[in-house]
Image (cartoon, rainbow, N blue to C red; front, side, top):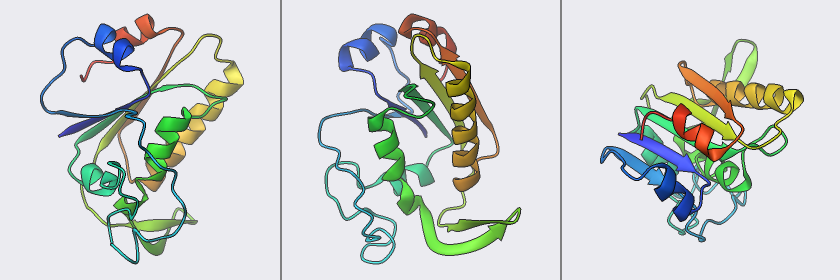
Length: 169
């Protein structure tokens, strides 16, 4: 299964991608996502599943079944949009609460053993060189934390240009 996480409106998404593959699980803003509250319930109370029941509580399980995750996000100061960032925060149940040292850094252990690929497509007019560099470092750090070995990142100045970059929908 492939996962697409995006911050586009329904109208933007439909106009850019009128046909989607049935093997793609699409995660978009339906207006119900709650912010991670840092309760660690996904590690202690209900291992692997977020305690907030808002339709985004199964992100860890979804990631465990994915071969490729594609993210489409407006670039906000070298970071993801608030919605996409929130989805990634809610994906913490994919990891275990235990630590291990990798490359002299402390990281959480994996709960699931799948090896997913990641493709991140940032869009926005006038993304600065500094924002691009920050975004590249962020995506690379996300890949380390989520045990992703194969990833790609792109930047588009407009949604129309973005459509040419995204090939997995």
